[in-house]
Length: 88
Image (tube, rainbow, N blue to C red; front, side):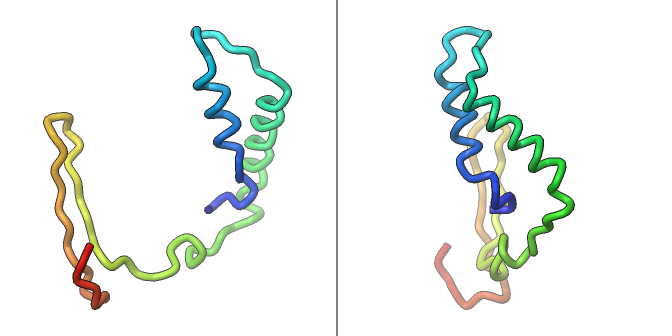
């Protein structure tokens, strides 16, 4: 959402990477164009700021933390004080 012009650029690169059967891959014209578009987006990112309200439209209803130590997955939810919702 932060990069409004990046729509479909991830999927083009993802498709290219998952279709590779060896450590080498051929960059076709579509992939080259997607990479060039990423370079253009990076170069113009500071000129097109995105308001934080478009990314996070309201305060979170819950705070969460997780443990990703590879010995299992644990976590917890805490309700935010600003939200009346009681279900995560």
